[in-house]
Length: 494
Image (cartoon, rainbow, N blue to C red; front, side, top):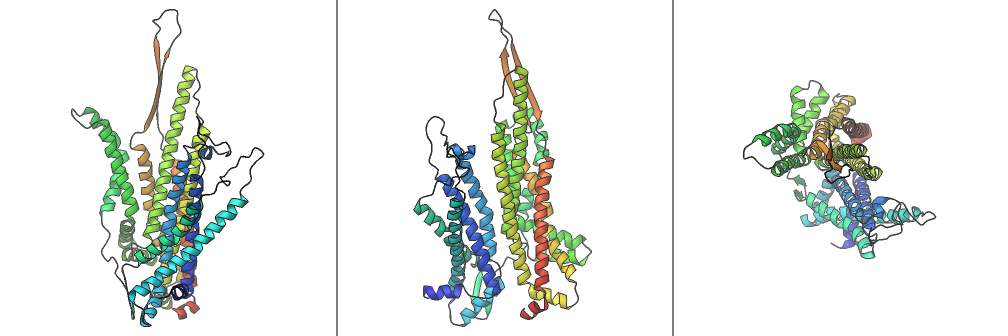
């Protein structure tokens, strides 16, 4: 198959195929922007010298050589939900694409050529998006380059990565998109009469649930196990104990991220068993029938919530540490000397990154919800035609979106805070002072302060409520899409 023919077949199709190309291109542009931003920060030359500070940038995070790798790592972590969003965009409108691939097979194309057309569509859309992201990056770099009178800038707009790095990032996005498209089609058999998908028909494994439950109860087990450890004649050392606690909490993180299918399936079982209204029964049955729908973006959302909760717990611990140091300094008549604004400013930057990641993951869940509505348009049309009110179907979509998220968000918040609190929940500081006297036998005074790190209920509530509010907006948009998909003209098209 010639490249021109492949490109023409890949970039043509129905309205659903066009939407998939647009969504994939938008996610590719966002991924390219994030990677280019990370490459720009990494390209800032080191200052060297005794302090290693670049004086041409006002933010300390950019000015100090040792802090810029943290910004690069944060931007790369932000690319994770973007990749999950891209994977969900590739799956959008699968039934329409399947019918088009079957038509190609009926026209004489081989199964490999049909899969190549689908992968070429993804690569082409990602390439267009990557080029658009590169153009936005260059325009934004020019527009935001506004140094002050001293030549200092807020962003590294005076630095440009090398040409091979720029070309590599622009080409990396479509290559990854093509590989992801081929990977998602690995369980598809294209025949001239249709498309057969080898899907998972067994229920999700219970092991993620075991890991999640263990991580939820770790904060309540720390004190009893520590009491036992102090009194054990030949027990574990404190280091081994803390390591064991951290491993259990990390296992719970893995359970939350990888157990999205188990969470959805378990929520569906509870709804089907205890619900009495049609909307909740429909939602429970749909969650049980397809618990893996949108699992990638769902996992990215929960991962962002876990990181946000961990950062919130770290902020509380850091604030307590500063308070303890200030108390010790006050008692000894000295100065603490900590730049608290710098540390909390860095944490605020991570909080902004987490918020962006939550919004991106929510966009991916919206794409998954829209894909489900479009693929089940005929079933919804039959239900509406037989007299089922649209508000019942809309309520079912809302339950299907929010019911698994509420317990999953609570678990993610608990596990995220446990990452910080598992090693300990107290902060202490001490200093030894010597009083001035005539002889050498001056008494020494030890000033020690110990405080309990408070659990940041308020900040955790804000993070959880914000996540649920964004997802409620996603559910509303899904209901609007449902009403559009059950319009009489759409029913005739189905």
